[in-house]
Length: 200
Image (tube, rainbow, N blue to C red; front, side, top):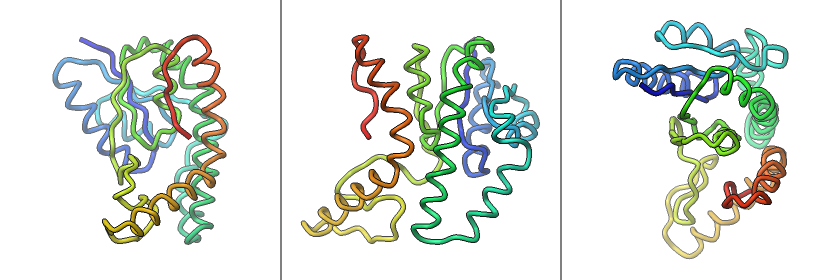
């Protein structure tokens, strides 16, 4: 039996598939604990999984509904910027608090939602095996596929690929707040002889 940790955003589109996956792993004899903010606790416990809270000060109960309400009033780049700011705060919380919660829980492996920025970094820093889980539009980049935040149609032509590349560069610029948190940690890690872990 392996003690498996789950890292994912509290939004239902992430939490529901991850707790379902966790429940199935529990049925197969594993111990499963989700590390997350307080708004995840009731759903995690209802799924029969263990829960470890992080971010109790920065993300108290009710903060997810408030964030979604605020986001619902925005559109376009304003909505994207708000989302990046929210993920920056979440990433900071995860990087600061999740490693000790994972160690204290005795977790041996992680399932990391692709939208949990910094989750794979945490696994690498703790020297834990991890699997990246995609519960939403995939973040994986391919110049043939339009960026996930756009409504662009697939266009295999040279101009479609160029458009996609420019879109990814724009995302990189807008997301520097998040990669700026993660990359210094990884640079320190790389100096210790580890492989490259994150591109940003």
